Image 1: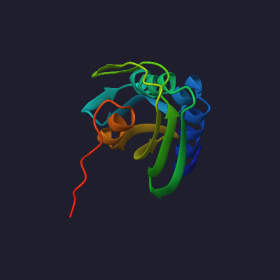
Image 2: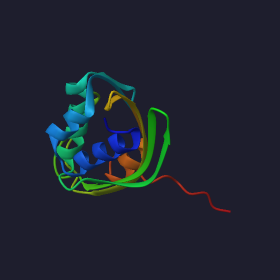
Image 3: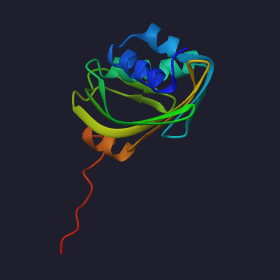
Length: 145
């Protein structure tokens, strides 16, 4: 059976390969998934579907893992997501039409592994950064001295 670090690495490899079957294989049938925007999903289909929504919207999407930390059954991956928003991003809170803009943003995912599969996943990223880079909200104001 794969160790915790290996399961995390395989999940990222599957994402970077845009391989839906491999992503599904890394997730437990009853995986619990959370993401920004109060996204809470249950089950392999829903969790895999969330990943595929991003991969379909950003056909050149890649995760570059900068740091990995493992503690028992949990792996934490700090990453940079990069991709071009070429198709509609569909999600539980609605659809975002393609902006054809490049996105580069940091995030963290925490995966709890059970029996060689991702049993729980929590994803964290800066929603304001995403929306700003996609041109969906103005750049933040800067303070002047």
